[in-house]
Image (cartoon, rainbow, N blue to C red):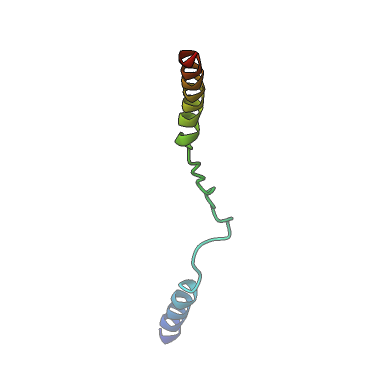
Length: 62
């Protein structure tokens, strides 16, 4: 009986030493956040307006 209890205790202690399994770990792809540049679209609007105002001022000066 002592041998049976000793064998059960050793097998229980030996089986708790292994964590996980042999399958490949699942690694998620990193999330890439791309910032939008709102100032570039605003600059695209202001440049033609400035040119138009310069032309209008030149025409009004004549």
